[in-house]
Each structure stands twice: as C-alpha cells, then as structure tokens.
Length: 197
Image 1 (cartoon, rainbow, N blue to C red):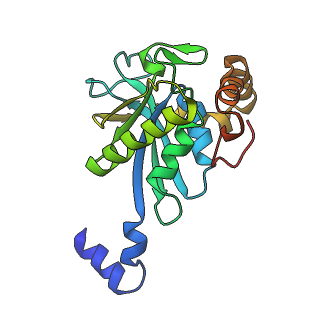
Image 2: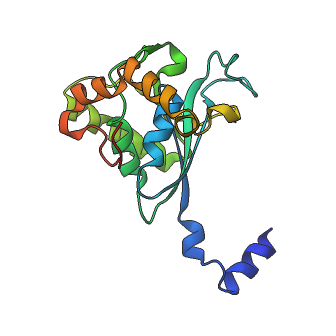
Image 3: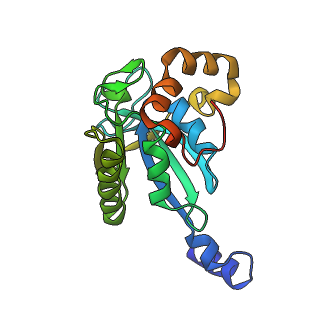
C-alpha cells in the first residue's frame, strides 16, 4: 500500500497536501439521521456515516445498542473546514444543555458527546465546550471523551433523509429538533449548515 501511495504521489496523481487534508471527527447529537443530514451540508465535509459508539459491544445493532450512542463519523477536508469550525456547527445543531437525550428521543443512546481521535482534538473540544457554555450562559451536559469502538449503522439508516424524505421531515418536525435549536441558539442556530430544515 505504501509503495502504491508513493507512486501516486511522485507521478502527480496525488499530492501529499491533498492526501494529508482528509481528517475525521465523531459527534453524537441525538438521532443520527438528523445530524448526518446537517453535516452533509457543511462546506468541506466529504462524507458522513451514521453509527454506534461510546459503548463496549463490538458489533451493536439498532435493536441492540444499549450503552452506545447514535453518532456520526465525519470525513472532512481540513483545508476547507477546521475541526474547531465543525465543533461550532455541532453545538449549534443540538441542545447541549440536555443530558437526558435530544428533543423527543430520550436516554443515553440519544445524548450528546464529542469523541476525540487524539489529544489535539480532545483539547480543542474541551475549549470549544467552554465557549459554547459561555455563549449560552448555561452548563453544557455534552460529554467530551476519547473515541472507542465504532460500528457503522445498518444500510437503511445511512442517508435516511434522502431515501425517505417525507418520513424524515415529518419525524424531524414532530420531534421538535429545529424548534428547540432555534429557541436555544437564536440567530446562531445551524451555523455553517447550508440548508433549511
């Protein structure tokens, strides 16, 4: 693999700068359908995958993910969007003051968290959490932790908002997600996201 990569770099097919720009972030923000849609509309984000993390099961499923959170794994180009900017967007697409879940979805599986992949992300996330608390003038309940096991969710959950747009919009509206985020964050709600609901 290294030899193929070096050949690609030296032949001009792939520059080291482009290869190095691809990074990963993991956020839990309630229903993964919703946070997946929000982050797929952030400039610089290349891919968003729904999954389960934060627990000890090696292969959790939708019917068996007790102790895990629904989350998203974001692949992004850090020459176009920084980890800090993604965190700013994350805070403003969730209710980080709610430690019992998100909106109509209750319980640990739907609670918020930032899962750092290294020490730098951990430090940046901790500073960002303090800034979010200051911006809201409230205590932030979101957990900041090092990433653990990750399992992609089932295929039918991936890009759910595209596959089932009517059901998705109905769910999001009935759950009160946009209403609560907008009430909490005001003009800062959905910062960095290029879409409506």
